[in-house]
Image 1 (cartoon, rainbow, N blue to C red):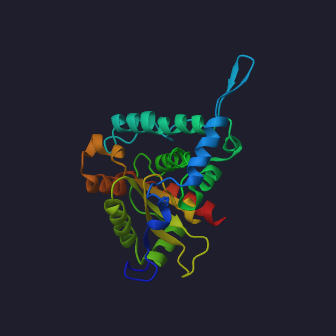
Image 2: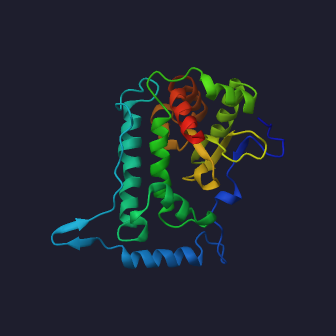
Image 3: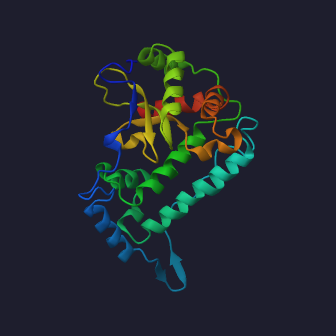
Length: 261
């Protein structure tokens, strides 16, 4: 993969293109965003049919393993708070935001793209994207993870990054240098201009590569609540444990196959 000094860096921070555009007075919300919020508030009261209250559709999905299955590398305490409190909060809040609106009938991915609004974020974006990001994060790990990929995934990694070790270096760097809250991703580019289909991306807050037209195949959550109970402020230690003991390369390979199909 190209070095950061190259014209198209393999580690692609989601910079200005991924941040809300400032309004005329320097605020993060544009007139369009504020109008959208007003319109939705007028339409967002729950619809009632008799005694029943109709609510939006999204449900909290559990991780694909018991909450203690990643111990000792990620504690049950961390997963209980991360999934049971933070992830649940995003689901509950999104359902409140979209009930009775045109978004209620859309898929989670469609809500993310529509409310990203070319960087001028609409109110439901953060909750919708964080639901998707967390569902994806749980699938990026497994009990007894780590090791090294094989097959087509390893071939593409070696072609696009030079070696598996170089990919790990770029992922670690992206996760460690994402300022504040955010994510580090390995993504598939279906329309590469340089022939390289895999790239490392880091993104702030809830933003993910879907809004750039990339297909994520692996992520590392670097919001502090992902690791603070186990590692306090030692983000690099958490990243190392993720790469060495938790990452599911089988899951990554399956996502790559789906992205290429």
